[in-house]
Image (tube, rainbow, N blue to C red):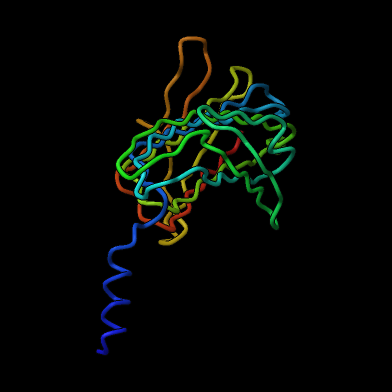
Amino acid sequence: MSLGGKFLAFFKRRQPDGLFEVLDYDSTLELLDGAGDLAIFKRRQKVRFLQDHILAFQDYAWGDGDVLADYRIAPGEVVDCYREGERWNLLISLRETKNRGDVEEFHIERMVRNGFTQDVEWRQTAIWLTTRRIRLEIIFPKERPCRRAILLERSTNRTIELDGEQIQWLPDGRQLIAWEKEKPPKAEVYTIRWEW
């Protein structure tokens, strides 16, 4: 291998894999009415930055209906938003400089209108960065609980029936479906599909 090839191989090994790694990822979809007209995604994402001088990062949204009826993030501020195919890209300004090793916890809330109006619906999460733990939840309204839910793992084409320990009833009579995984592989896409 030439000296240039050795340097390139060394450089690639030294490059961080993304702006940050995700230490903990909790995402809840709360269906606010039985018709599926109004829903809110809430996400808590604890990250460790892997590079110096980070000022901004991208977030994404996709799905049916008005997926960005309202969007809020703390800390940070949306400074640009544009559509690319089926996906919305949001540029988030951190409002301060982050450096390698810094840890931050982001709280994101996103309102969706007319997004879950069918008898069979879905929500999807894509893993693009090194992630230590992921937890996905769906809260169903009291008047319209879930009848059946499955989790699809795209890379393995595996289907997991969500029942038993993944289904709970909240004190107010609403139904909660929850699934979690330690160290999900990068480039994996998880889809929860349900009938209600």
